Length: 160
Image 1 (spheres, rainbow, N blue to C red):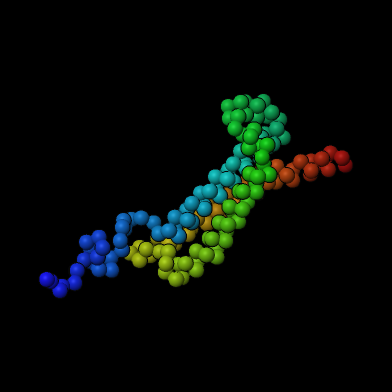
Image 2 (image 1 turned 60 degrees about the vertical axis):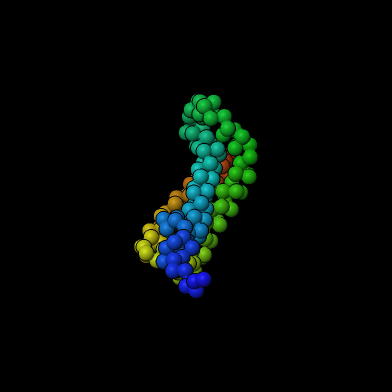
């Protein structure tokens, strides 16, 4: 019987080497990307369902809206449920703000979210996440203002 200890790690590599695919993203980075993309796409959904048709009608392009809705009838369903669409988008964007500005810096300070072989990857990912987040928030704000604020302002302006 041999009393020697195994030399390699679990995947046959040296002891202490990470198990699995080294190019795979850490879980925190994947969550950040998923949250960023979800908030971007939900804010685009609010823009498409509720803000864009309102703006086009405001500028006298009602026929364009009718053509657009006949080509993409699913937008009517989104418009009927715009409260839910705006709520979900707002919650996702708020959660992304918390993650990007509160949780991610803490994870980076602990050294648990950045790959040790590429220290610049976290800075690049953080910059990209913040850009996507602010674009999402801007699109959401335009959609919210158009869907909920512009109508009452125009009614008030017309009544003067």
